Structure formats: structure tokens, C-alpha cells
Image (tube, rainbow, N blue to C red):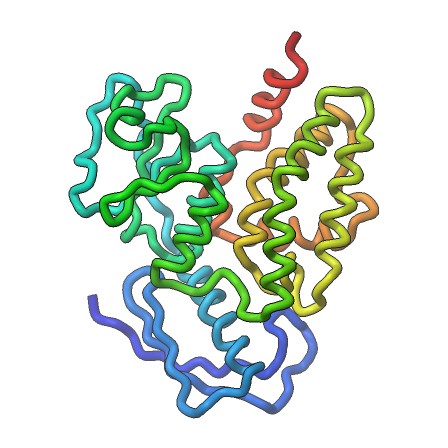
Length: 299
């Protein structure tokens, strides 16, 4: 398909600010082709700050273009399904539509604009096919990525791998301080999950409250955007599937609103709710609440 040449003027100013833009404008030609394949070429050397804006613009454009792409999702494969032609050169992402860990990688794929490059292969975890363990991934878990005649697993490893090895906007900052804090936050994800779910099993919400206070503090570290590292990144992707589940369940089961007294978290949730790449992976909140009720309240 033919590409379209546009010119985008972006201001030497934070994207989400509603203040009048300054007069320092960098003009760049943008090459847009089908879906999210975007090329931006500055017409003159950019300052360090302009380079950051340049990369942010690329991410904004990719997200905006992805919003118009509503993917037809394939049905989940079960024990009666035939296996795909494994290692035939096709890059495949094996997921479950209900798994938050797989959802991380699915969101990353979408944010990179890789809907055509990485094929979704959903697995029915309650009736999973034998060939998945035997032919695809011996660990018999999701997510798993089939790429270059190898199958890799573990969600945090996979979101980094996809960001580093596929085209599309970078989802991790160049700034060293932000990189270090990002790694700290990614390392905290398991503790966050365990702390919140501990409150599911008891009468109080102290552990969950402490975990969300940590999140509120983390969201307060940088002031150049509403996300964990200021601008949207893999860190937001790592937390989004879990907060998507924890928020409605705590409100329903514990009458506990995680947003009360946490303005940064409330703003983060609001911004994430605008992200179409994330929204295309989300489940009905009622379904999520019911799933957690069965797991934590049934005796």
C-alpha cells in the first residue's frame, strides 16, 4: 500500500500540557503507511530535548493509528484443535485471553504496531491441547513467543525482548535514571501482586493499601507525564493488567477504592483507560470480579 507523506509540527513542550506552546517548534516529515509503520525524519539536527519529544511523538502516532485498527481475535485453541505449523518462519505469540501475564506481552505487541508481524495464538488453559507442551513450549504456560525458530517465555522478559528486537516506537526511556527506576519497579511487580492478593484472603486491606501507597509514591517521582517513568513505558504495561483486575475486585469485595487519597494513581488509571492498545486486550470487569470471587471467596 502506498504511504502518505505528512508534515507534523510538534512543539518544544510537553505533549499533555494544556498551556500555550512555546515558539520553539521542530518540523519533521512523517511517513505513514498501512497500520502503524511510521518513519519520522527530522529536517535538521535535534537537541536532546527535541530527540525525546521526537520519540514521544512516534509513540503517540503509533497509538493513535492503532486506535483505528480493531483486530479480529481468533478463537482459543483447545484439546480438539490442530496445532499450528510450528517453526515455519511465522512469529507467534501464545496467550490466554484471561491471563494477565500474557496480557502484558499482548499490549506490548499492540503498542509496537506489530499486529501483522506477530500472530496471536490464544490457548484455552482449562482445556489446553497436548501439542502445546509437546511441540511448542515444554513449560506448558503462557505467554510464549515463537521467533527465529525458538520459543521464549516469561512475561517481563518477553516485553523487553519485543521492544528491543522489533520495529516500532521504543517503550523504554534512554535516560539512565529512569531506566534504573524502571528496573526497580519491574522487580517490585511480584511483591505488589502478593501484597494485594494477601488482602483478598483476609478481613482487612492493610497489605493492599501499602502496595498501592508504594505505587502512588512511584508515580510521583517524575513530573513530565502521568506514567511511572513520566512517559508511557513497559513499566505501565507490566502493571496495567493487574491493576485492571485489582481495582474492581477490591471495590466489589472489600468496598475499597484504590483511587481515594491517591491522585497520581487516579490520573494514571484515567490515562490508561484512553489507551486503545491496552483497551483491546481488556476483559469485562464483571467477569474479572467473578473470577476472583471464585478463587478467593469460595470455600
